[in-house]
Length: 145
View 1 (spheres, rainbow, N blue to C red):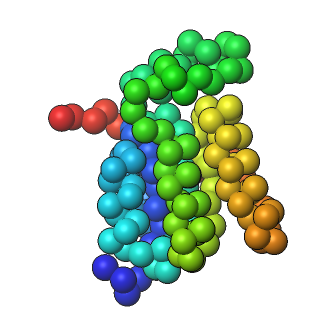
View 2 (cartoon, one colour):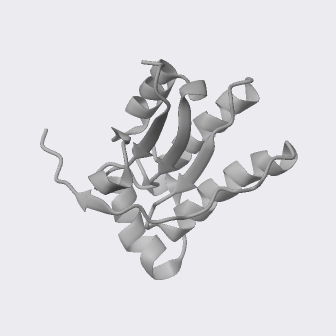
């Protein structure tokens, strides 16, 4: 899988529109770890992350983040984009290549947590603190199990 440089898009329900380029779309934490491990960070140019990856995270967003600007991870049962962020930084700490990461999550508090975590790593290692929120034109999909 390693000839072509890949771009990774983590989101449980959104899919980037074709005009945004080629993306490897990943829907959850386990798939994120598996796919990045298979592709190899050296073959990835960009990772775009969502925070809320399933129902309990979305419920937390609707209940607390949207109205109160608070995020309680104790209310979330599945792994989130923050878990993916922590795993990714752990790979960097273990010597894997650092890749560009952007955040496309609508969850402002979760986005800030992920950006802060990544930019803190980059600050400590004297790298540009360039992780930011952005918008990727997308389709909304219903996942059929």
